[in-house]
Length: 431
Picture (tube, rainbow, N blue to C red):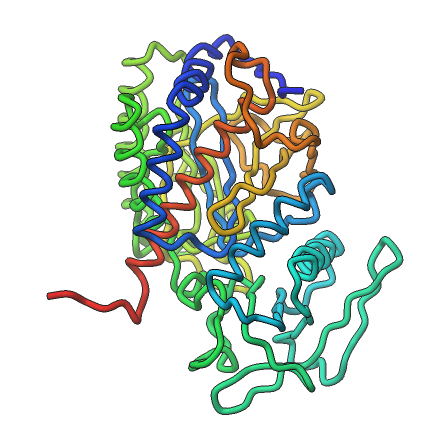
């Protein structure tokens, strides 16, 4: 099943799908050459929005937390990709230490941790869980809804290594996005592989840096396919010193919102699109769908209520928001059972391992769906949809649609590789 596109604007997206299928050998070769030059992030997930006239990533997560939403049919591919990733980094790996989010009792998240343990165990590693929660001083079992349990263990740090009691790992996998900063216990590990690296965490990472890298990737890719990069790239700008509660710096946000709305209007006119443009203002280091609002007119920023200001001023772990990205809004015209839906693509190493739809019955086409009340439907990707079917008419084949999503997902992953190179504190600088 391909989700229903509730729009008359299905022409261009089908054209894009057709073009990608026809260019498959060129696209795959291009990716192979890029991966010879750049190291993919260890794993990542990408939220996409399909507007019918445009398909673009709106967020790239380097600590993906929804592996439990992938169907069992997708597991073999994830296991193979995990094997390839580990083999490349530490072929002699035997033990893997997985560090999840701290203080979490969210059952969906814990099921994700369980699925990650399953993937890496099936890839042939001994996997144990170490927690950054210092209140846990002995192995602690957490019961899961399916009757199984996870055991969290306190971390043990020696001078150069990190492990658990009687467990010395070669590789440490973070599933914690470090929003609250880098814990001391993770610093200066010289003999172990820490994945992803510390500078992938939100204490360093910025969405604007990512979308700057994505713009570069989208231009290269669009040139390969002979198309306008705007069709796959959301325009953006940023403001650096905003105090939501005091109202300082809001003139910068307002000016940028106005300028971006004008740019979008021009693009809409060029393509004959009768959509009311909107932008999304997000915390530049935001995560978990926090610190986000949709703006359709710059004047709306004059009348922000206290609740909106509070919502925009802090994100996860109480981090204050002073930097924002103003991003072109891409509406989503996909529906699953009448609920607004957006595709999410999951990758390990350079491979697409699966995906699902995030749906939200109470949200509109121009709103953030990563919010309480959202659910996940592996519907369209319930089979293994990784092999496209050349020759099928555009818009009727789920594997073909998923191939297109996978291409855009991999472009965002490549952008993350560029971004991590640009922000690597240990990168060699060539004069």
